[in-house]
Image 1: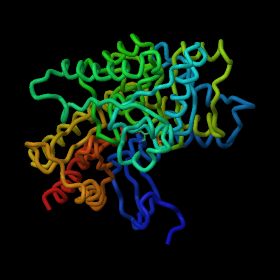
Image 2 (image 1 turned 30 degrees about the vertical axis):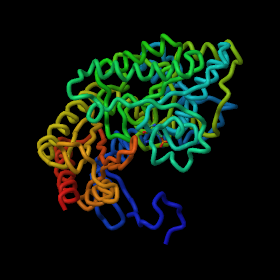
Image 3 (image 1 turned 135 degrees about the vertical axis):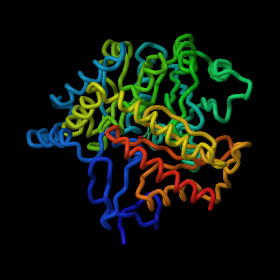
Length: 441
Ligand code: PMP
């Protein structure tokens, strides 16, 4: 009996009672390797002593002070740290409590920026189909995840969508990555021209798409062309790093590997490592100055922004993420994970693609590998893999979704950065058994 409204009603869930390192244990004493860090959240495992100590110290001093009266050392230190780590001109941090809030704030920031600089006609947001930016109304509108949007469509603010960069399915067999990138950017340019170049305020994208595609990075050149196009039309580039940021791909920010700097970047999940609900928006000097020299405020805010315990946790998490060697470890373990998955599943007739960066890997499941034909959605392959993986003592993040009317199943892996090589190998073995049982059964 439960009085909690769970997402899936009537599906009983085990009770998680403790976390040790990369493992979660339930009330029946079963342990699970956290191969997805929840939803790419728990980057430092579940009981990091230094993060717990930082939270405890803050809690004993001050739990809460509203940001209309006070700032705190914890919040100021976090802003100092993140803006020092982010490339110029991302010199300012706005704090929120999670990913959807970060995206909402980013969209409002873009809109207010244009109002402040005297271009109030700019109101269109362009994003990509098969993207996920959160579940609140504005963030859901920006996202292109058809399944999550469908029943809310009539109440979503208007947003425009273009094709994602999805080489496995969309790059022509004889098309070079450069030609593919050029084609996608041309499609975006057409959309901008259709809407009127001076009417568009922002283009929003995940550097590595997480929840709706399973760790799909763009081809080389794509983001540089996007950046140049946005600059040509005076459009802000918002990169959503809620899932792929904070070291997940082997660099603190995923966009560092693309050779571009966005005007606005959203972060959450790994920023608090699951120890606290916390997120942020990094914004450019130019946007900050428009607010400062214009109305003198950002017309936004929530009760829990800059929460002292959340920011104390994030401050420690980010400090640990930037210690020498940790990003190299993410890259090294990620390469091992990819190699293990290739060896265990690469020959499976039901594994179409294994991809990703760092400790952010995705596996696309198909019924026919040669023709890339997905399984019938009625088979709920993703749900079966999740259940079988849990029976194996593994948490992974499988999803099924539809783009342009085509259903697909994939599995996302996002283990903590503190995994051992043996734990990475265990993830591969357990997942391979689960996938084989479901796809071949
Ligand atoms: N943006 C991206 C890229 C995400 O992956 C998510 C969550 N999966 C969100 C935004 C929303 O974050 P939250 O669930 O913390 O609101």
